[in-house]
Length: 129
Image (cartoon, rainbow, N blue to C red; front, side, top):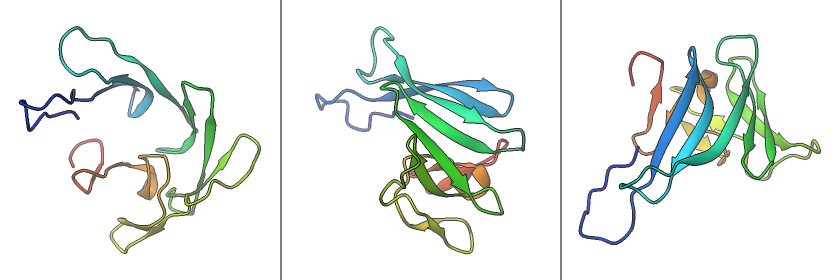
């Protein structure tokens, strides 16, 4: 992520860095000032379950934890906070091919627990987009 298509502008490019444990992303780092000296800071931590691609929770650096509730296919359908309260607009309905058609969850792991790239509209299935 983070391709600057207009180098003449003054808005810095955002870069995301990931730490992996096998097939699972466990930590996100963010370098929001773009190029130059890398100053990446911790952005999110992930808690994965024992099943394949079973994303359970995400914790932001501010300490807010979001618990992902999955359906039968492992797709994240709803989200709740640490108090167990439903997070508004987090319910997701999917098209026949797994694309989100309703809702705006705070996770990028959606259909069958796979990583969804909203910019390209594609899922990453660990070997190809």
